[in-house]
Image (cartoon, rainbow, N blue to C red; front, side, top):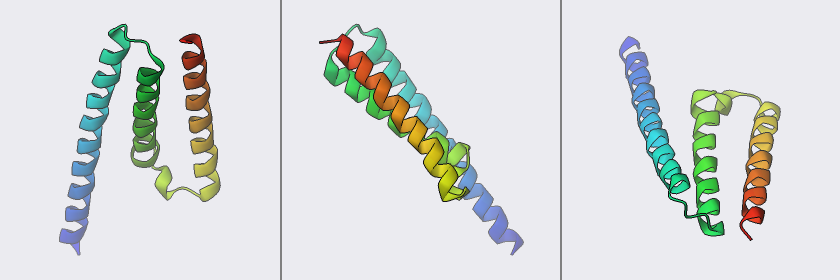
Length: 96
C-alpha cells in the first residue's frame, strides 16, 4: 500500500511538472505573438485559445478544482470563460 501511494504521488508530480513546462511554453508562444506586432483578429483568437488552455490547466490541476463541488467549478469556470470572451471580443473589435 505504501508503494502504491508513493507511485501515485510520483505520477502526480510528473504530470504537474509536464503541465508547468507546457504552461511556460504556451506563455512564450503567446508573448512572442503579442510582441511581434502582428495584430490581426486571427492572432487574437489564437492567443485567446492559448489563454483558455492555460486557464483550464491552472484551474483543474493547480487550483485543485477538479475535486471541488460542481457549483464551485461552474462559478470559477464561468467567470474565467466570460472574462476571456469579453477581453477577446474587445481586442478583436479594436482591430477592425
